[in-house]
Image (cartoon, rainbow, N blue to C red; front, side, top):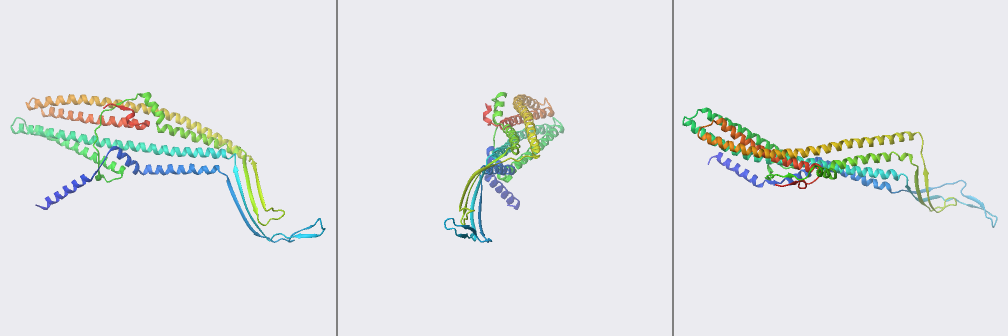
Length: 441
């Protein structure tokens, strides 16, 4: 056995081993892996966690602040004491000052009126966390749509390849017939050449499908972060599904579940909280204060134990109130601006729903048209094949009939998969499950 044959056998063994070890992924597995491996989703998760930490950290702003003071001093006084007269004996005495001072005190302050801004600050941070979470979910939905499109296009190309291979066998049969006619002197060589040209065109189409299939698989490999040759996509054939919900039902589902609507609501809340926060500088500051001080070297002017409780009220006003007034006005305008922009966006979302619904219906009609085209093209090809066998028609008519049937079959495949993708796109966009809006097989 030659070296070349040995090398060929070894190559076949390697290819077979790789094929056996290749993992097969379903659509859901591809979606799950892509969500897990996506750098963009991971970055948005970090952003979500950062927003969550900011929200949780602001909770501590509601709690009072405490100040702990400890002191140790060596003292020197002149005169070294306090003089006085004993009222009972009339004698003069001197009480020396202590040579050192040791104190420990704690003061607790709880602001009251600033809790207004703290409360709305917390709500604002909580809304920012909700927005970060919705943005991650929106990006996840976009990634799902991308993976789904790749998966179904891969299936479409694989099934298209089956049709092209079937056509290849058909053209080979035509070629053998034309060659027999040519060898028998019934036709000239142009008949054979016409079929050869069509066979070459078919090979070009097969190469195009093969290249696109590899490109899609490479794209999928990048999304799920595995080597291109280490996996296969599970073969899936789509069945005809009908849209089971009308426009009013789809509208209600969208209003209840669509992430963009929730995002618009959150954005309005942010500016509403900003408007209330802008009022804080105009509010007087009320704070409760309590404390205790221990003095181990007490004197008549500094008792050993001191406990105090009370409150303070302050109100700062001046020309900076003018800036505060314009800040409030700016916040109001921002809130109204956001409300108007959101109203315009909601109209676009409603229009998009109608477009998606219409797209589903158009592609459903394309399926029915393709079915009729296949029936017509198959009957036409049958007639042309019978006529060609009897030499009652030309190779041109025969090839045209073959191309028409092939185009009709590819058209039906395309319509089926495009309709399936359109249904999935509609479901994901309005925030519901595929099975909730479809029925039939």
